[in-house]
Image (cartoon, rainbow, N blue to C red):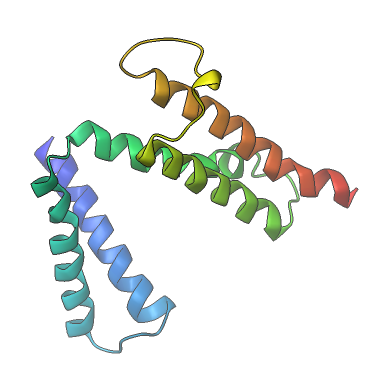
Length: 140
């Protein structure tokens, strides 16, 4: 478990640093990338002091990336760029709904500790799939 966590952190740090220095061209030196890694480490630790549970962190991030579901499942489809953006934005919106717990209760059809998470992810995936496909349908 520790090895997995370290590997995930390493990927996060290096990806964030690469995005800022190479992709966004915000820095030119290795030192800039290292400083950005420290900033991510410090900012990522703040939720620990706000009584966050490890499961809540993974469920929120997992919900926010459900917009990538159609991108990976339907990768062979010739989709315009807007399909990708609509799907990913939908995932982010459902993640925000989970964070602030503002999902309509009428759409939660079960009870239990994780019923909100279940139904937000269910509707989020369906919405992401539909929003991904709409531009493809209109393109034809």
